[in-house]
Amino acid sequence: MSAPVPSDGNQVETSATNPHQPEISPSTILDASRRQPASSTPGAAEFSSQSISVFTPEDQEKLATAKRLVIDNLRYEPDFPIPGIKFIDILPIFQNPAAFSSLLDVLVLLIRERFGSQVPDVIVGLEARGFLFGPPLALRLNRPFVPVRKKGKMPGACRTVEYTKEYGKDEFQVQTSAIKPGQQCLIVDDIIATGKSTRDPLLS
Image (spheres, rainbow, N blue to C red):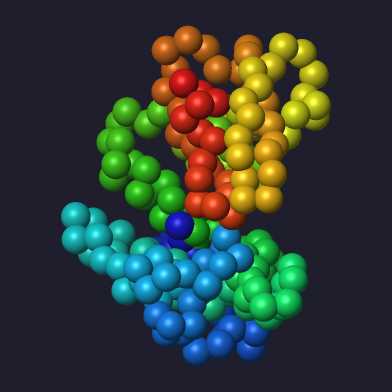
């Protein structure tokens, strides 16, 4: 998840302080599931303080730069989508090419640190946030991208899985020909308000 440290070795400067972002503290951070998190819920404060000691100094600097850029480009929207909800808007990240590129750099870094040379065969993205990060991440990793969409949006034979949300049920589909038997998948997961995920039943 990275703000780019370009190939020429020049460090990208972080953007100016975001006027839409309040002072960051563990008590004020909200997660993108649109809920005030419990004190144990990871948020921007925790993200900014994380350290991964197995990385090289250069990688650590990439990670630190990405954290600054990403946090600086979050926008906090009170009373959205309903009164009383404080919403973290991640879309300003995509308006800042340095922040978006840097975020992708560190996502790749974390994936390669986790999997080494055995990067999964397919990148799967769940509608809708998985579509924002999944395709460019697949390009960085030289892997195919497979979308998982709401029911009825894709042609051909599909596998369908129903899942329960806090306000009802929905269905996801993936084309049966998109993932071959035995292929390993790396899932760029969407955020579901309950914190649950559809990834296991859909791809098992």
